[in-house]
Image (cartoon, rainbow, N blue to C red; front, top):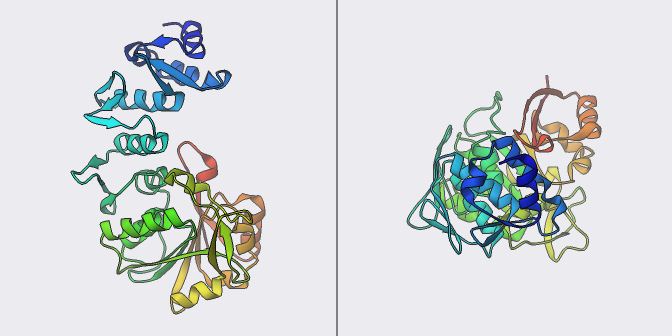
Length: 315
């Protein structure tokens, strides 16, 4: 099918078959789906089922990966009926299938990784980033049993990554739904004894802060402290967080959607010999360099440069 014809069909929301899409060249298909910005609903109709364009793109990826996909009043991928009414759950199921997770009889998802077997209740994209893209796969001089403070632990993916390598982790997460999901994931991965989880946010003045909560776990990844938030949570500065570890932490991981600018002004930042931080930006990078840190390595995100993880260390 030619480019123009496919674009016209997609933009018009016209009926199109999965076979036509899967036989189209990959680059053409991606271009066509992305072009749906001209369609207010961003919907593709396949076999009389209306689907968001991003879902269709993921389904094509599933077909190309060898999964059986059927669309008939709904979508079934490898025998799993996908919840079309819940795009969040649908996205997490596709995250799992496209990244070699297998569904267990109890509904959990399991996969083998470089740090061993891991199990998650839901496979958010942050789980994929940590265990499949290996964004926190860095070498440090620290030994098994050493502490890492994880600010912005989300559903526990990075905390589990560190714990599976023998580290002890103080996992700090303010969003209630993400925190509760983290507690479940820590138990599933048998690392409760290695991870101390606290429902809190970073705050340089040790003040209570407000955050929003989310029904969709995927949305918690971009959550940040918001004065208009609906939930009050404790706020701790670095000194207080260090006290939770009896001053044993020398490694800091920061992924807090906006608190980085506050953290670089915390005098106890200099306590840490190694810092992992998501796409710090020029201001934060320069501040860290001026403090004597050097950029050791960047683990690049394969599709989103703003989600790349930077490793800084003291010489």
